Image (cartoon, rainbow, N blue to C red):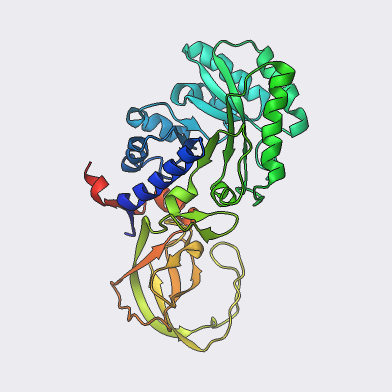
Length: 360
């Protein structure tokens, strides 16, 4: 069985950097642990660090891990109307963009006898969730007209570089800042939290200052992988090897680089393309789609090239690799965000932890 090794000391290094970064910029920080939500050691590590709030995307996890949360987490995935009761039961706050869902949350919170905090998401260009900016004041007015004592509209938020790859700019972050000011002036309701999401903000803030009203940063990938989405680079102060995926070499054979016979589609319905490189040494590894996102894995050994994969296996060209692989050998991989999330969630991947923090 493939194994995913989590180095908690390296992960703590990244957490402490983000904590110091946010404190220096007077920002609350939400540690988004998508994919890691079911990992008790990771959750506890974030909580020991003093994170303002944990950001989770799964209500199933929120319910199952409830006893491990010191405070109710923030739901960073937009909930459905049907999930309102589960949201207010398991989460202290949530991101929302639909009035109907917010009404359902208010009703569910009243039934539960709790106060649920809502951040209204604003569309600033990435075209994922959020009300259009011109509708923000009107939507906030309708939320306030609900008159619910069990629903707190604490502010507005936005997300960048997670759907369409839209990068931060002075224009889109200022738009969020300006809307917070406009809502307060028009409706007299304080925007206590103005929340921006996306690890790409780390890169942008190296050369730009946030507008004054932005006071919360939701961040995940940079902490977990040390990488900045949208600009596809490693952050110079963060570690990119806190997670390591290991597979086993099942077969080593020299084979033609082009299939023999008429070619149809592969296991995923895609017709693959091949380049004739003659005979090549190929390693068959026990990592497929049921384990991770094979195509986005990054082999640790040098000059190992991904060829193809299916549900259970991946094929790698190891002809030019200086390491001599034999059946039974381990091949290690660094992970992208997609391969990490799939690997963490897969029941077919064994998880283990190392580092001083693992014994706490």
